[in-house]
Image (cartoon, rainbow, N blue to C red; front, side, top):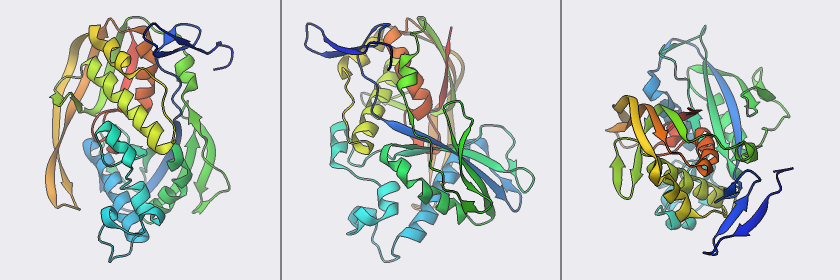
Amino acid sequence: MSGLGSRRTWDAGARPRISFGFSIMLYSIPPLRMARLRFELRPRTTLNLAPESRGEVLYGAFGTILRRVACDPACPGAGSCTHRQDCAYAQIFEPASPAGARFGANDARKAFLFRPPLDADPLYGPHRPFIFELRLFGEAIHAWSVFVDTFRRLDGSSLVSVLSLDWKGTSAHILFQDGQPTDAQPQILSFDSLMSQPANGGRARIQFDTPMLLKDRGAVQREPALPALVRRLRDRISMLSLMWEGKEWQADYRAIGELAGDAVMNVESGGWSVHGRHSTRTRRTMPVEGFCGTVSYDRVHPELWPLLRIGQEIHAGQHVVWGNGRYRLFEL
């Protein structure tokens, strides 16, 4: 945060507050790093992928191939594997950490998510490649070649290229091309630029592009109230930072949750969305649910804007690895 005179101050309750020049913030820049990778797959025959299932298909294909490549067929599973510290499947696809208990979770949050295209046309093939983005967090960035190698092995498709993207979504490095990896490395992004932007006004509109399933204080939120969204973003940043960076995010957790309490929500369009997902591992069909649509919020506190900007990049709620919980933030 060059040029903004960042300094730590203290209020009467001895809670840490961080100044970034334009306001007194309740949280510091997250120690979390991110990389954006753009994959281009070219199916050899026509492939039908509905918009709501694309992320689930990518996730399932990645997990199936990675386990086949990385695991001993006799392995009883990542939970009881005696070699999990050396197993790419266990470390990436079924990570575990005792630190997760601090957030009510025994397993660490996965440090990746897929962002498939959202267009309505479901058909991909030799003349229309399937292009998606993979986002990696923290130490998982260094495992990027595992993802590339896994998708190279995908039956029925050819991996055309993998590009590392900058914040603007333009190509920064070519990681894979012409059937071969290059010598380049992913560009690593930090969230300091999102923190340093001026605070916006008190009204916001959020377009929830994929199902947003929020659970707050034990209850499912049928509409995405701002306090629930803010608390889930707060916890997601905290967990990813702790488990994949090994660092505490300096923040006043209680105050962050309370700041959104005065916001007034207005659902402009959309509603509850449900579709079925069939799991090849459990052989069961389960509902995938969440809110999709547009919501406006009045009385948004200035200190929440950086947090909401970060949420656009890391998603929030349930099933984020499939690309759920994806939204776009606008100032009104």
